[in-house]
Each structure stands twice: as C-alpha cells, then as structure tokens.
Length: 598
Image (cartoon, rainbow, N blue to C red):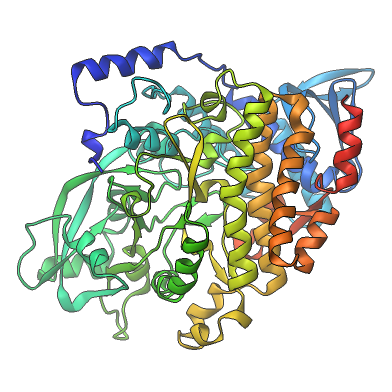
C-alpha cells in the first residue's frame, strides 16, 4: 500500500480529475454547532430520561419532550420519525412559554439537562456544562476548518492510489461525533494544540522518537513483524538502544517528568526528535496510521468519557488476546472469508524505575504504544475500506457517506445493498459470541466497510481489541494463564456480553446505518428492518436458534448504552448501564408497520 504522501493520485491529469469530480459533488448543507449540540442533548434525553418515563409524544410534525422534574416542555421539528425512536430533528429547539414557544439555545438546554439530572439523581456534576461547552467548541472548530474534497470511491476517475486517501478521508470526516452522547467531542487540553493532531482538521504529522537503552524497554510481541514495524520507523538508533515511537503531543505532556528528564540527562534516553514516515490521525484521535501499520498511543487527555491512556493491563491484554484468539479468529475467517479482525500483536513502552525499583506507572502507561495490523494484511485486493461511522453519519460530510455510495439508487437497489452488507456483518459477530464466547464490539467506529469499485460491500473488518471481551466459561485456560489484573478487564459474563453485542451491533451500528438509508428512502424503513430480521432468522435457522437469539427475534427490548447517565455519574465506560428500547424486530411490529404505510 502506498505511503500517506503517495496517497493522492500522483499525476497532474489524475489530480485534475480528482479536483473536477470533487467539485461536481453536491455540497450538503451541514447544521450549525448550536443545532448539533441541542439535537444531541435531545437525543440523549429522549433515549434515557423522558422517553423511558413516557414524557414524549410526536405531534403534528414535532417532538414534544417534557423534563418533568425541571417542569419544562420542549419542542423541535422532525425531519423524519423512526421505528426505534431515534428521530431526525431539524431547526432550533423551543420551550413552552405561556401560550407560545420561545427558542432555547444550546447553553440553556444544557442547563435544563443539568438541572433535570441533578433532581433525578440527587447528585451534582460540576464538570457537565464545561464538557458540553468543550464539545461545542470542537464542533465549531471542525466546521470552520477547510477540508480537502475527496472523490467518491466508485467515481470513474478513481485510481488505485486513491483508496488510501478515501479511507483516511472517511476516518477524518466525523465532525459531530456520537449523536447519543451528550459530549461527543469534549476534549481536555489546549484547543490550539488540538488542531495539529485532530482528525477533523485532517492532521498528518511525523512521530517523535526516543532511543532508549534496551534494558529500559518493556515489550511483548506475538508476531516478529510487529516489533519490526516499530524498529523500522528510524535508522539512526545507536547500538544498545531501542526505538520508542511517541505521539508528539504526548511527549510534550510528559517531557518534564522528573524521571524522564534525569534519564535524558544521563543519556539513558535520547530524544531523536520528529522524523520517519508521516502518520495520519484516525477517528479515535490517538490511533495513527501510516498506510502500513496502525499505532495506538496514550494521550493524557480526556476525550468524551475517558482519559485515553493505555493502561498496563491493556498493553499486556492486547497481546494476550491476540495470542488467545488466534484459533477462534482463524476458524471464523474460514467460515466467513469476507470478514476479518485486525490483531494487536505487540506493545512497547518505557520502563524507567521509580524510587521503589519498579517501573514508574505514569511513564509506563504514558509512553505505551500498541501495534495493530495495517490494512494490507487483511484487506481484499481492490476493495476500498471506509469507516462505518462515516458511511452512516447523519449528515453527508464525506464522500464515504451512504448517499454517495448509492447516488440516485432506487429503493430496491438500496435494499439489495443493505442485505449484502448485513450478510457480511452479522453472522461472524453472532458466531464469535455463541460458538467461541467472544464478545466483539462492532460499533460504528470499530468497523470498516470495504466496498468494491461499484460501491457494493465486499468485506468487513473489525478492529480494537480493547473492547473485545471473553466470556469466562469459554476461556478458563486463557484467563488462568495471565495475571488477574489483566484477566479481569478482558471478561464479561454471558449476559453482559450479550447486551454489549446487541447494543454495538444492532443499536449503535445497524440502526444508525439503517437510519441513513431511511433518510434516502423513508418509505423503506420497515423493509430495511425486515431485512435485519431476515438475516438474524437465517443465522438462527443454521445455528439451532440459541435462546438469546430467539428472544431477540421475538422482539425483546433492545439495550442502548446510557451515555448521558454514565457521563453524569462520572462512571467508567465499562460500568455503563443500559436503557431498553422497544424493538422494531418483532414480526408483528414489522407486519403492522408495513400495512400502515401502504
């Protein structure tokens, strides 16, 4: 695969074709940051607070939503309703004021949300408004930044070297983030520093490299190539030293650590400065890609819920999972050759001893880097990988969006595309859980949709072993072979694991991509859900229909992660609870809906 600097078409004629085709694309009208924040807060209130308490109603093209404890009635216009209750909003939010309605800006709605949650939980969260403000600032910055246009992956002028550019454009196109998270773009740190490293600004930059005396390096590798991918970043490493790539922003955050400063003065650590191949920021911000290998770094910043550091157990856990999952992933690849999981076969970090003689934890975790397989190792030849979150975005902010893949497609063509995609996505996730006790986390940011030259799905790639968990009864030997502090975070019990699979697969991923398709063809929403049911039914028929899958087909409520309440209560993501959504999968629901739309 070409490097990042080679990724655009390389000749003048090809560049001109790219520019012409990009300029001919319809420019979607994107919402303002104000509307994004208010709509996102409404989504969260609808899903987690007012909806479960039956304080909402759809009336005459509007959603009415009451905050019962705060005593406020809100209203917003609807672009489209949703069978799952994940409606599309348009325009400003208003509150009832006497006999009329008065507009509510994003700050006031954030205050109402804070007040409602405080009264509901009996707790305060003094960070909440600040985090919403941070999210608003990040969205405003992203909208103001000029982003290079990218031609559609199925455009006739496409060139093989454009595949990497199209992929990176999809990774860097998420301007608004998770629409069911109250602070989807909240970030700590200096906003001016963010611009140099943020995916929304199209950041591409060299790494900062340290040369570390070999005895001060901690690492594990499950594949020889993985360590070589780190060592090969630079050639100017003195004998007796090992190369440690670092994220330049993280280096700036840690460079004044006393132990690191002392090591630099002694010569145990050498600062080689920036250099080597350029890396691009992907949607996760801290995971970078150079066209060959993904490197997942630590960042001492909080993004949405979490401080984005590679904890000690996560570093060891990535390699342990890569080793332990090899038989299961090989079996799944044989059964489902058009899907694959990107392994994480190595980590490396700095192990400078502290006063007690053990490696200093802040430096060990802060400089930890995980090696993830790059696309060339798993990608079907000729396919273009696209981030699923970009394909399913509510607004077409990149040429990866489903509206660009299915330009002018009629409903039957869209349904055909949808069925093809579901057959690639759903069976391997279910087989991983039921047959191998493996909880994949196929949410929109963890899946790549690989399409052919015609824009049709050809392959699905899953990534990020941090979210992959084991059901203990299937993996006793593996879990007893690793330290308890590593084994614990690697597991979910069977019930929690199933909730995670159903949430990530159906609510976060399938429902959102289905919504984007339904935006193109609103009359087809029930038919789109029927195709989801058909795919689940087909797998159930082939696999003996496990009880949990039978319940899903019968229409049990679907688990949706409670991001608003988790953020309010300042819980770790692992401790997040779920709210239950009425399922659109039950046969009678789909039958009745289809009749009502005729």
